[in-house]
Length: 178
Image (cartoon, rainbow, N blue to C red; front, top):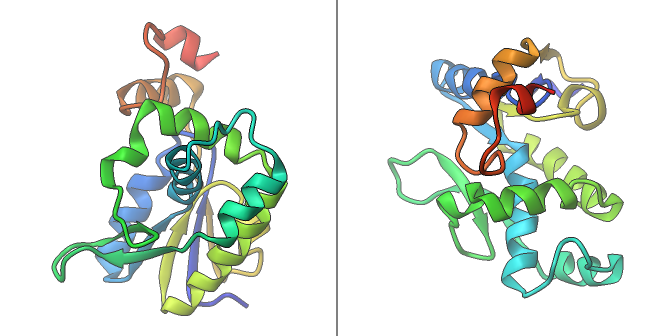
């Protein structure tokens, strides 16, 4: 059993990140955002000059073999943050370009398999709160504590519109809710 992991699952803009961060702070344990891991792979591909929409599985495998992704503290007082090949990309991971690329990257079976291993390995960090889609079903199906969050389409659309880089310019509440 993955007793070190508190798994928080749910669809986009359901409140997973907020709940997970608050829970990790309250318990004084690490917080892992798995969506950021997909963004990290997208960031790396873009940084290597590859288009996530036309990259081949072989090209992705080559990049993944040369990639180190971890969660570390940028400074002693900082929370854990994603580090890619020695670099903390910070807000670059939330840009519209990387957000769009991450959606494509998340559909790639080789990326999903590579990140599954990485995510499972993070349970060795000690007690953690891990949030993202499929955390309680595919990544840690045997987690002792699993939560699935959801919200109405309208609430989720409002949240998504307020998140930088998450929607296309000109998106409306109605179009996002659809």
